[in-house]
Image (cartoon, helix red, strand yellow):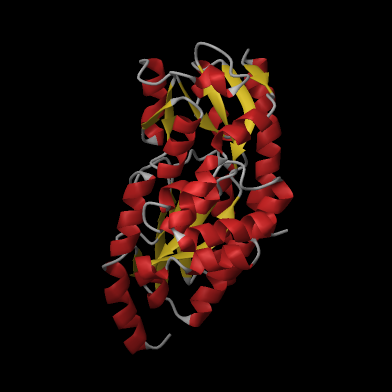
Amino acid sequence: MNVTRSTLLAGLLLATGCGAESGVTVVKLGHGLDASHSVHRAMVAMAEDVDRRSNGRMRIDIYPSEQLGTERQLLELLQIGSVGMTKVSAAVLENFAPEFQALSLPYIFRDEAHHFAVLDGPIGRELLLGLEPYRLRGLTFYDAGSRSFYTKERPVSTPDDLAGLKLRTQESAVAMNMVRGLGGSPTPIAWGELYSALQQGIVDGAENNPPSFHLSGHYEIARYYALNEHTRVPDVLLISGAVWSALDEQERSWLGEAVAGSTALQRQLWRESVDEALAAVQAAGVEVSRPDPAPFAERVEEMYEAYRDDPAIYALIERIRASG
């Protein structure tokens, strides 16, 4: 990096989610998960990898637990370049890039193998790079497993058991429509506010994967967990378009190699964390059940047909269902 470029880069990055400290490029990464989560641990490994590959010339500073904002706020901060990188659920991304709605549809993936075949193949690559018009660039998909319902007052064995329940959802039209289709009442609430919402009776339950159910402490209040596995909504690692443009080819290479390593590590850690989480909540007295997913899938099948009026998303849905 020559002196002229260093000076220009420093000026740009200091105005964005990056900084330049004595020739070191520093990228700020904010996310909403706990520091014990597999995603955070993989990000820490990514930051260490970047530091090692660059011999200290590039650094990623990580701020977990919504220190820099909620997922939606972090996306907005990336768009204006105030934060360099973030991890958000694909469900939150659909408010910025409508095509991501397809990934949140219930039972669109036949199983885990189909899920990864789509994300790691041409469809996933197109979705990540398709974010550039929104001043974002997708880097990878992290595993967020399958999402299932947990409730406070009664177990869920069939869709009828959800009737009348107020259920927390992400800020996702697809997630809200799914809960309505199953007979529940969707209530969007920020992740960091959900524990108190459950405690205060604002909602009767929520839906999420086992590690999130465990690490959030929600199992202390919601004592029934029904593994109907209605969705497999991935997490997405993103970088600000402005910050990406400011990085040179070497810095992009360091970052890309570190991202690939963190993806493999996160998926391994995820599998381990699912087993650990289910064992822990059951040991704490939570009733874990595995209801037949077929009645749930049948109840929400009509959600696919609702996209016939949106040819681009409907075509993507058909590609996903036919792939693998």
